[in-house]
Each structure stands twice: as C-alpha cells, then as structure tokens.
Length: 294
Image (tube, rainbow, N blue to C red; front, side):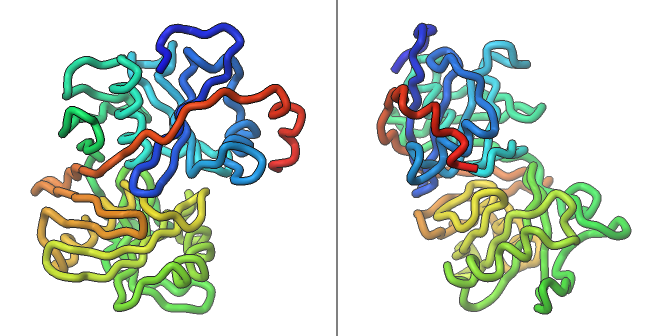
C-alpha cells in the first residue's frame, strides 16, 4: 500500500469489519476533493465500488497526524463509526503510518485509543467513548431527562426506548424476536422520528444471557446493515443500564460478533475483527457519471 503522494492516481482501499464494508480514501493517494456526490458514487453498489461508508484520512492538515473523517453512503458526515475506526486503524497499520501496536486516532475532536491484538491486525480494540443516556446529550426532544425505557409512539406503534449516545445518537428497543425484516420495516420511521432532531441509529435487541446480546440494525444514513460498532456499544450499554446484562457483553450481529466492555463510568471499549478486501484505482469513465447516483 502507498504512503507517499501519487500524482494523478485515484487509489482506494476496501476493507470489511463483520460484513460492514468500508472504503478508505487516503488523500496521499487520491488527488480529488471528496465531495458528498463523490461519497455517494463511491458507495453506490451498482455505479461505484460499493460500501457502507468512507474513511477519509489521514488528513494532511488535520488536528492530528492520524485525523479521520467518516462519511455515510448518503454523503453525510457521521460523528463516529465504530467499525470505521477499526477499518481505519487497520489501514494505518497496513500502510505503515504506525509502527507500534498501540496508537491513537483523532475523530470529531477526540482521541480514540487503538490496540492491535494480533500481528496480522485482524483483531483490533478501540475505545468508543463515554456513553450517555441524557436527552440533551443524545439529543432527544423535550425536557432534560434520562431516556431509559421511555415509551415513544412512532408511526402509530408504541416502543419502549432506551436512547444513548456513543458519540452519535442511538435508539435501542428490546424484544423477543429482532429480525432483518423488523429493522427494515420499522427502522426508517424510528430513524427519522421527531423525537430525534439529528435522526438516530436503531437497534432491535434480544438478550440471550447476562453477557450476550443479539441485535439487528437500521443505521442512520445507511439503512439495514450487517454490523455497526457504535450500535453494538450502544445496545450493550443499554442492556447494562437496564439491568439485562453485565459487562463485558458479546454482541451478535448479522455480520458477526463484537465484544463490548463498559467500565463504571460508562466508557465503552469495542473489540472486533477487520479484514482487507482489495485495493483499486478508479477509471477515467467513473467521473462523467457522478450525477447518476443522485
């Protein structure tokens, strides 16, 4: 993989973390401005390489030598991505930006600690940050309060909601039978409910035992997704907060399993696998068709 600038080359790198596939765009190897239109094009499953998101970095003029920005497939920038952080951590390792197995990444104004668990860098641990259930932090409309098993009526259906921020907003709903069909049918209305002014990532969760959860995910700006690191962290935090689980929590998702540890101050740490898929160079034909992904 390339670290030095490559004149005129539009190289990208594809990774997957528990089935959540990401493209890394390194400004040192990509001499076009990353616009929302280009993000949508890159993520498009038919008109581009296809991805669940874009890791953009390390940014040459950022606040930190390993500064990351993350973009959803709709072109919007996300405050945080647990799987994106792990993918970017693996890219930094592969590309030679780091030499030790412990380092940090700067994202959205905060440092994220990274630990490479294996020499192959297929298992990586990252800090996620402090979870909060406070309405003003998430945010959720209405008076300041903790959003823990609060009833919300959305699109005519009453849900018992535990809302939490993991650096981005989440809505966790516990039940007996989470399924992809449920996430896909109910997720859009919950994501865009008026309760959530910044929209929300949605998790339908089932407790398997005191240390194990199953979740299905509707991701803000991305739709149904096989895995999400912040969703796993938020759901695990909600399960611990409501007394359903104890830390650490093994979170089973459609794409695989992640481990979430939560300390007494509600700081979450996420461990999961990440794999390199391929690298490529965009062809000249890619550019005139950008408007087709609108």
